[in-house]
Image (tube, rainbow, N blue to C red; front, top):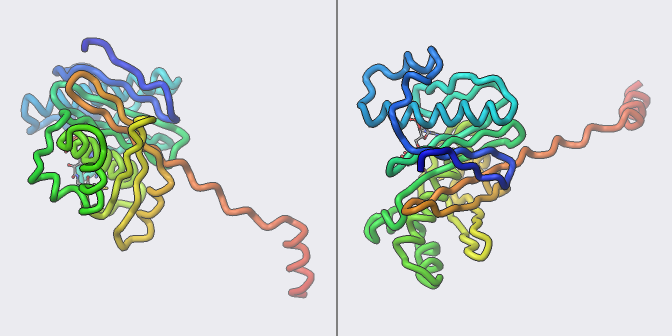
Length: 234
Ligand SMILES: CC(C)(COP(=O)(O)OP(=O)(O)OC[C@H]1O[C@@H](n2cnc3c(N)ncnc32)[C@H](O)[C@@H]1OP(=O)(O)O)[C@@H](O)C(=O)NCCC(=O)NCCS
C-alpha cells in the first residue's frame, strides 16, 4: 500500500499507510523525540505522526505535534483525541474532536498462538470464540487487538493500566463490530462499556478501532428550581 486509506464510518478519521522513514516530514518538536530510537522505531514513529498530521489537515485543523508522555502514551494537542498504531509494515493514526476517546490497533492476523491466548482471554471469551465459526487463532488475535484498541481509547482519560483479563470482548461478526465489558475494580474504567468497536481486514493484518462517546452533561437545575431553592433558604 503506498497511499493512505480512510475509514469513513464512525466519529473518528483514520488514515493508514506504509511504514517508511518520514523523519524529515516531522514537526521540529517531534524531531527532538527521535534521539535514541532504532531505525525501525524511527520509521514507525514518523509514519504514524505524518498520518496524524494528514488527518488533522483533512479535518480542517492546523497541523500540531504529537509528542510522547513519560509513560510512552501519545500527547495530543488540546481539543483532540487520537491514537496511533504500527504493525507488519503498516501504520495508522486516528483523530477526533468530538469523542471522549478513540483507540486503534493493527495486528498480524492469527499472530496469537493458543498458549498466549490463554493469558489474554478470559475463560468465558475462550469458550465463546471456540464456538464461533472461524479459525481460533484468528479470532483470538482479533479479540487481542480489540482489547488494545479499548485500552488506548481510555488510558488518556483514566491513566491506569488495565490487564487483558480485566476486559471481555463480545465480537459481532455479522457487522464486524465489537463491544467491551469491564471486569476490574476501578469504576472510572467502566465508561469503556459505553464504547463501540469495529474491525477491518487489510491484506494479512487486522485494524481495530474503539470509540467512546462523551457522557452527556448532567441536566442543570432550571432557573425556576434555583429560585425556589433560594426562596426556601431565605
Ligand atoms: C500500549 C500498548 C496498547 C501498545 O500496543 P502495541 O500493540 O504494543 O503497539 P502499537 O504499535 O499498536 O501501538 C503503539 C502506539 O501506542 C501508543 N501508546 C503507547 N502507550 C499508550 C497508552 N498507555 N495509551 C494509549 N496509547 C498508547 C503510542 O502512540 C505508540 O506509538 P508511538 O510509540 O509511535 O507513539 C501495549 O503495548 C500495552 O501495553 N498493552 C497492555 C494493556 C492492554 O492493552 N490492556 C488490554 C485490556 S483493556
